Length: 193
Length: 207
Picture 1 (cartoon, each protein chain N blue to C red):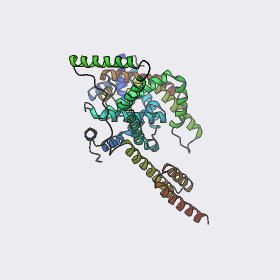
Picture 2: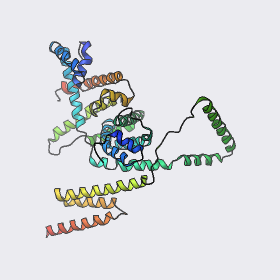
Picture 3: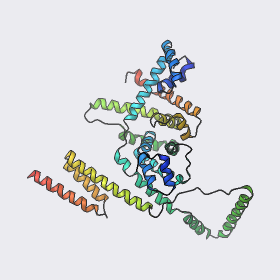
Picture 4: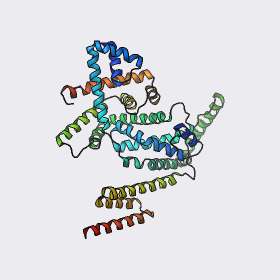
């Protein structure tokens, strides 16, 4: 399928009964949505399950979708809502959350077999501290930070994705950056970087 | 934390590269004279750089994405089974209890009340719209299609391992995995042929 066809046109084709258009949309966004969810939930299996749920929900709602916002923003909206639900469920079940984090860290830290093992361990520990700091943001702060910093969404698009006013997005973003600065300060104050 | 409170938001925006050009120049000028804000910008920037680095380490492996489409269609197929008719059937089965008659009367009264309310007050509530898969593009057809794509993908991986990495042991295990995945299809014969070829090549090398 032509890559020049924009998302909204593919949606229109899908609404006209062309199923392949949805496959093309999945192909375009599965990696982005998966990586966004992986950053958010930090567990491969959960990220995969939620990604499937995002496209499942999108498929079922796409028939009546109106291009008020970009298709990608709408997809991130579904993903963000599911991620926020996931974090809320996890907060209600802290035992599960602890086990889950331990498993995910094993997978998440990039390993270079040829580097110095001690340095590798330090890097791994630092990576864990940083990702745990990000985890300490509230679900909304985290969603705002992730969408704007790593998914390249403009503040206006983040606002649309999270059903917030643009000013509220900015407040969440400021709080997120301030919180990260407070939590990570010991890393550079102890000359760890 | 800067004592210059007025510019704290600007310090974050500047570190985040979120200031407009019209705001950036005056703030740069302010930074030249404000030690507090300079330190704040430096620490926000350091925090963001650390976070970026930790996020860069996170890589989505190709195999994790391989089955997404197929699983979406599996999910759709499973959901389709739970249609309105099956829900109704379940309901009417449950109505067969000793209090079934009362239940039916109660539900009918509510339904009539809703219809009357809708006629007088406006449009009745619509059920959540859901798009159904067509016959030509049934979930089963899509699942089979993606399953075959997965088999082909694994075969390609095995051939890459064989020709580019020259790793016979890994190639063999990838071909066996592919064969297992292809059970019930003609792709098992393709896997067998490649396995036989691999064994003959390995034998020739050892002789």
